Length: 324
Length: 148
Image (cartoon, rainbow over all chains, first blue to last red; front, top):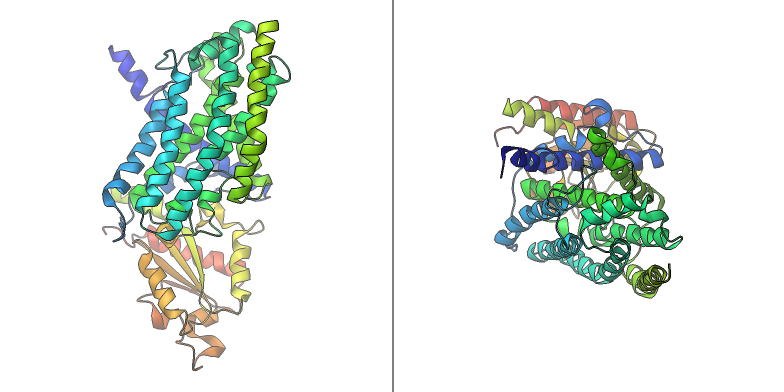
């Protein structure tokens, strides 16, 4: 391993860049939500409030650390660390610099889907180990929600993989450039349908509005995060920002590849980042538009509508590829 | 330098927990008005959080009744240090017109170990509440709670 590889892992497009990008996405999320609600959002901390997530992070790191008597301290120490590490690892499989992933290998799409399942399990574990009824309730809802969105998410993520003939995210991204158009526009309307299903499943995966029943602050305090304080909460918040970045960059690399970005040289990371920001902005916009669904409504939507639709889109994609 | 960074971060990210100890809702409406579009304290980084474990600033409204006293104390104790208490409205400061009632323990002064900022008024305007919040942030910037 050369010196340059180490720099790539540590700085760009590695961990330092990813963490700062995650903070930037949180700021964007808060700003877009504020604009939808006719507010300013973060404004005074740094230019246009862009340092707000960093200030939040440092403040939480410096706060008192409380582990309630009924909680399992070991689990509450392990889960926040894992919740940062898992998305960071998964993000190295995504071509975040617009050309090639840090770790491109055949099957990285499956590895990312596995990481998403683990993240959901960690959320359940955190809530369960908190020793608090609200946290346990949030954990249960989170587990239920995972059972609903996981299958449509996997089914719809297979569509671009089928078209590209590969399970490596980097290869899927490159094949779109070779084909000359993003998968979003391929086999119309199948690519677009698959994108919409992926978007809805991402919202559920990230527990964002309208699927934020696991942390519904108006009914169960803060859901599975209720008992977390100080640095544990700081790491969990960072982990969730990283998951947000992961889903947005997955969307950008699986559906929005184009022939021009990889040829831009030094500007390729910027072009890819713009796509990621656009995907994140869509998710933030939805957050401002919708109300929260009850957990049974979430389950019904996913099992009665999203499941058959995603299965149908997958079969139609396969059929179209065989016929065309 | 480290202390400076921590002070800056604490003064830039006040997460608010709002607790009504028996107010007539006038102060609560004004607190909510401070949080919503027209006044929007999120400009200063303030977020309204649901869990006392996440909060930095406890906003108390209303006279503390005998029923709400143990709840107020428990919520205060659940908050991690450093924490500040802002008493909003005359009732939260002294009990207001209800002081001396058989079921009222007085204001937040009389119940909590400390109240850092008071915002008088019946009810105070959102501008006054924002002013009180900024004064609480000044306390944090001056180093309240650093070293704990």
